[in-house]
Image 1 (cartoon, rainbow, N blue to C red):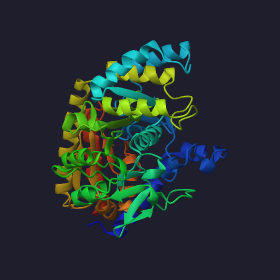
Image 2 (image 1 turned 135 degrees about the horizontal axis):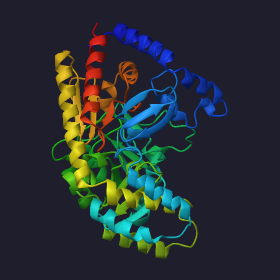
Image 3 (image 1 turned 90 degrees about the vertical axis):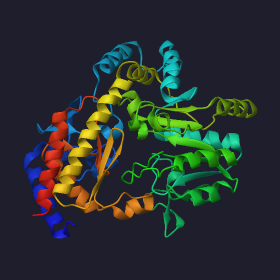
Length: 447
């Protein structure tokens, strides 16, 4: 147990250290007054540092700031650069495409090859391209409601599926509540969203047997309340119950693409009816994809044929633009390979072993969770079984102090929780530096 006084002491000391080392970041904050809260998007204020680090450049698994600081980057754009910053093949392909045009609102020859690669890697035969995973999730929900004739979506407590309104319902005291953080919501989402705890097979069966759930939208492993692993057999039961009740199963694999080549469903099973992948698949270029089975494709085509002409509410002008198609085709052809994952998983295992050793040496009642190339340490003694337990176990002040301590020593973690990503270009020396800085932080917190 870390005392609150120790957390405050470390946090204050590290904040002063950050101020001294990053004068240009503070000057940037003052100069960027035209942005709301001095950042181009508001969640950039969520970093635990007094002001955000201002990036200058990034390459491989290293990021540099305008203050001349160099960071071993284990955030990697919160998965957008999971396979490393600016892979050379991607840089070359983007430069060539930029000289030929960025967006035509027409298919390209390269897109035909990409469609085949998506199907081969990710295990579903039909695909569509969007600009973000949020947009892909919205599209999938619309399609599922449209082809099923059902209104409701089932999600798991604490889930994150981007900025999709339907996912902003939580459980509080066992009852569904609107998530208080959602800005400007005027509809009661509980009328069309059912929320239960992850790994609760009884609640899942009861909800699906009502017959009014169009789809289950799920990460096969929860990743945004710390990582919550699927209990043995839970995903198999989920697949079985969806089959029994005519409910479509959607895996949002935007984060669990870290599990292995093809994502969690391909690596571990089961196969969903629809699948969403965003961020990393384009190497950081804004794009995402959603795939679906042949049966779902037939139902979608029938719905399209039966509806009146006009905008479907699915897609934007920039969906499947030429730059995004080129980025994804290059990534799947030259960067995202089985050998890529071999390196990532070996590095992640090294990181897990190092962190577990230092946690034990410091006598901390913490644990480490791994989902392929994604690793997190949680400041609680046992792995949470669901989102409710995970939220209860979080210690925001402690996590912020740790993150800032590590950042001041050249280690960058994602700001939202204790997530660390190992890319195919992350070196053992970088992993060892992270483990060493973590050990130093644990020692400082126990002084």
